[in-house]
Every structure is written in structure tokens, then in C-alpha cells.
View 1 (cartoon, one colour):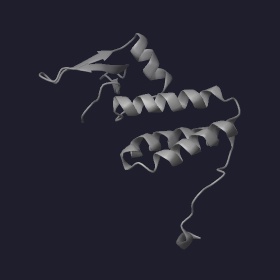
View 2 (spheres, rainbow, N blue to C red):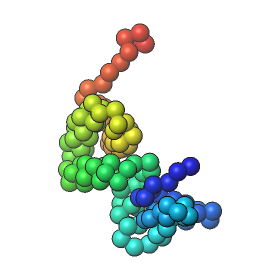
View 3 (cartoon, one colour):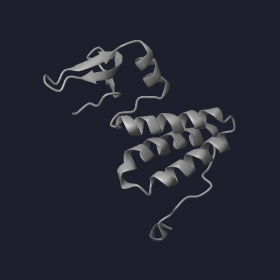
View 4 (spheres, rainbow, N blue to C red):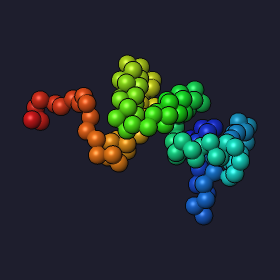
Length: 123
């Protein structure tokens, strides 16, 4: 399994850490178990597999969403972001993480989506 800088990591004892650097020559990872990078990673959840640019986009979107107090506004903002990201096939992983966040808010608050697609053959 390939790890990227910014990915979360659990050691054999189950303690979390965040990968802050990778030595390309030796393939050794530098893992931080506390500090600002670790705290920031914990603030945005355990997301792995995003490039640093995608991680920055994710954190920006989630920060904007968390500023809203009304759950419906939060879901609407996430829905718009997901719809925008779906146009770029390279952003599938990022859009899936945002969909997961949106699903969590909807399930926690008992909301249903404003727009959803259904395959007509399954009706």
C-alpha cells in the first residue's frame, strides 16, 4: 500500500499518526504523533489517498461547510461542491469523501436530499 504525505497512519498498537515526509531513497516514512500537523489531520478526519492539492481543496470546502450552522445549508453547500467536482474525472476520490461527509450530516440530522437520481429500471 502506498502512503502519501498527509495520510493518516496507525501503528501496530493502534496509535494514530500523520505522515509528514517520505524519504524517496530509503522509502522510509516520517510519522508525527503529536503537533500541529497531527492536530490538523485529526480536525478533518481520517482521509487517505488524496494529493496535497486535493487535501487542501477538501479542507477548504469542509471549513466553509463547518462555518454554516444550519444542517440544510451545510448539505446544500456540499451538494454543490460535489456536483462541481463530478465534472472532473480526476477528482473522484475527493468527491467521494465529500459525499461521505454529506451523508454523515444527513443521517445525523435526519435530512433527505433535495436532488437525487434514480435508475428508472429499478423503480
